[in-house]
Length: 259
Image 1 (cartoon, rainbow, N blue to C red):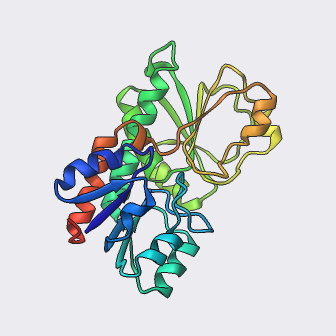
Image 2: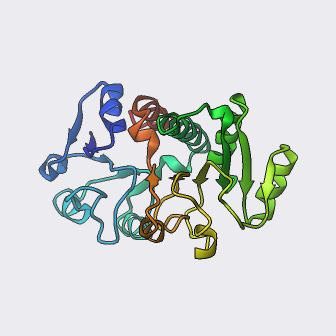
Image 3: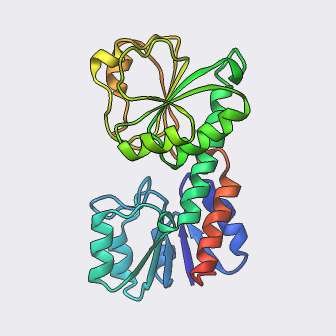
């Protein structure tokens, strides 16, 4: 039997519908003492093995249900990996699947542009946009923004990313200096890449979007002191396009014969 940990992530609401069979979908730990497959929140578990944004502990479930055979997640912490190895539990991550990663990046880019548009008083065509990093999300952001003839520039410290951007005939920024001439700055890199001198050139009227996970690439606390708003847009597929995101996870489960 399959159990799904219920959280605020709307993808799991749709996933429960897609499975269309006897599945336990609950935020009550006592519901999971008779299952063999557990689908946990996409953000996985913390270092104490509590599932993210819940008060449910994997240790407590396993104490009452030692027959748990499979766990499905998004992010895999080292503690979760070690627990599964110790107890001979199969650990599957849909973020290890290339198609899921690629489509999630596409959904994230689409959702980001949708939310960004709500903050604008002009057309996307009139925007000068700096994207920090050139991975999957940045690739799709550039592709979609090109449709609107937005003026896109890519910054990266990674030589391979810069080479790929140049081959795609995208403008690149190899050193961050004055950022004041960009209308919008979108970060996709999950580590701090700008110093205070860079941040001091950012104007309060600019749109700053953080797509990366903590510890982020933009020093949010410093910008708050300068009265700059940073839009934290993490987990967009689960917030903006949850039905499409759930379909990806459902197909991953089918491919791994969990349905």
